[in-house]
Every structure is written in structure tokens, then in C-alpha cells.
Image 1 (cartoon, one colour):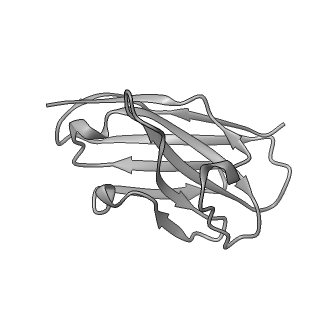
Image 2 (image 1 turned 90 degrees about the horizontal axis):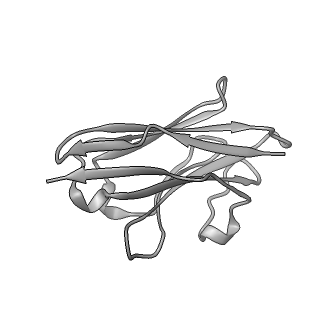
Image 3 (image 1 turned 90 degrees about the vertical axis):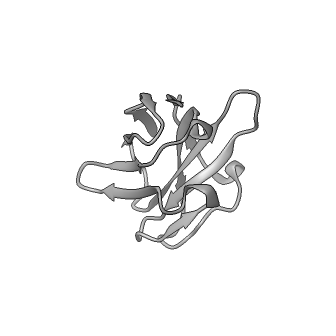
Length: 126
């Protein structure tokens, strides 16, 4: 059974940095993409960033461009979300999700993802 587990959340002050990790286990196919999502209190879940199996990167959220980067270490089956210059509006629960498909595929909606983690809390104070 495929599992995805997030780690690395915490509390930082505005302008600080955090690096989240998404560890994947129980892979059943050769190709998978990972998306990062977040949900702020009282708001709907939104996509943040995606990286495909072939390394294609897509920003779902324009406000994180220039501040957040995504990378993957396939030897460790882990995808990282580096978050710099954090702002209070970045506060929320961050989820990673996995999609099995061909290497260049980029999901357009969260319902296309196959497996989700439990989330990790990120709190940015002003």
C-alpha cells in the first residue's frame, strides 16, 4: 500500500524558512508525481506546487513563486518543499499527495491524486 508522510512543519516568524519533506513508501509503479497543497483556517484547500516524475515543475499558486521551490530525491523517495520568505498568509496545514501516471503528466485538480498524507502544520507569525 502506497503511503505518503509529511514532516518538517513548525512555527516561524515572518521572513523565516522551513523545509517540508514528503516521504513515499510502498510504491507500486515506476512513475509518480507529487503535489503540495495547503489549507488555511476557514479556507478551502489549494494547490501550491507540483513536481512530475520527469522533474517538470508546476506552480499552482502564484503567490509562492520566487519563495517556494520543490525538489525530489528519488534515491530516498522523498520530495521537498523549500519555503523561504514565509508570510503569515502561508499559515495552514500542508499536505503532499501522490499521483501515479506517465512521467510528464501534470494533474489539474486535487481529485486526480491517488494518495494523500495526513498533513503538517505550518504557522507563520508576524
